[in-house]
Length: 607
Ligand code: GLU
Image 1 (cartoon, rainbow, N blue to C red):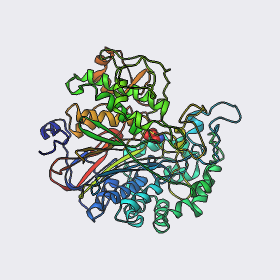
Image 2: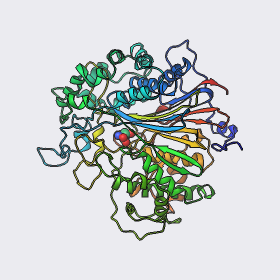
Image 3: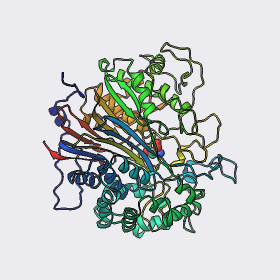
Image 4: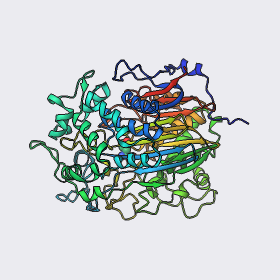
């Protein structure tokens, strides 16, 4: 019997919704790729990312015979050039890989780590004894810079599963950095949003604020320093980053932030040392896995909370016939499920090298069944809801015992995700970041890339019970959720998103839209979003509030528009996915509008 695969959706529906702009790979007459197409259908390989230059870099590697891992690293390296405020070698991320030959899903945790010299109270201002604020103290600081893991992730992925070497896969990105790319509105907007803090660092303002202003839309932006850095890394490999001159410069930048004499920004210094860089290791571990309505959903295990929180939510939702519900009812269950899963995320998830994280329990169907008892089908629970009992659960409804935990509610749309499938059926789902849009705001002088401020993902105040408390050498808890879905052992979907702690709900909502609500992958990505992370109000996009607000308020949900001071746009996430149909047809599906829209390409278009 043929496998069902993800439910097929009529193309006519996609076209009616204006989602059917299918692309060929852009002609090579213009070496700069500026055209963005959100959906591409075909064969031979597919790439979906937020940027046309980056997607084209991956496609080029696939065209020349590279595999999905080679193409993913080439795409990521290009994103380091064209999306320098979201990703780059100054940050970290999580790499999920399905190997067609072995049928196995593997992961690389390339998350940034706390320096060995980072004190438990590093986020407490020594002058006042009070915790630093996120803005302005922590966001632009040395103290929030973690040891970057991105280059080590690329090297490990290539060593394990690649067919090309670092030198080969860095080539397209090096070319983009030196010949330049066209500035779009999103780049200019993100630069302007960061203008004040970028201006505080001469190396950053020289690069990103030439002449004191953000580069104009349509102008060509070159980053020769980054091209040189990539060339050096192509020759020297990991040692070029984790040892030698560059390592010393990174440590110096963190320990003595190179701020201008006249800035009013505090910029607390950090402890990151050359020894921290020399000692950095990626971690390979089993993915999380849950079965949802016949689909095997693989995710990233802690130190990210992505896999456990999506997995638990799916296990909760699996207790209900969501497909049979009307939209408001389905969304009510989605909100209630994520609130419960976030309660458990907050209480139990941190870096498993330092905290006893119950990953198995959190992704156990029985635990999900027990948590589902807390959902009243007609009424929203008061938030925050309490975490579950991980010691004693049997799938039966318990009496609530523990205290609710208040969640920190972050939603900035930094970070970036890319999905790749090659002609052999290998699949990559890779989310990478430098944390805040613009990271720490500090470019390593003369090197062309920003350092992360990832350690802001730790809890600010030290609490010995908190699995996400600061500890030297530890990875802060992430929400990044690169996901690969299999059915009957065959891959059907690679998906992920940026968006701080909304990453989890964005990926989950898109899966529910696709699996339960009958949307095509492009429709599922485009649909208006909302995110309930165990807080009093649900954060939602304006279109979501307009469409579903009254019906959901009748359940007792409060909806509030998305957006914060760093991301004034009221948008949640930017999904980049590739779907594989039963006949092998690939649908690369990128975000159509949010964050300026993404770029989907296939090697051999069929539509
Ligand atoms: N630091 C965030 C995380 O790892 C990602 C950055 C963001 O998207 O805001 O969850």
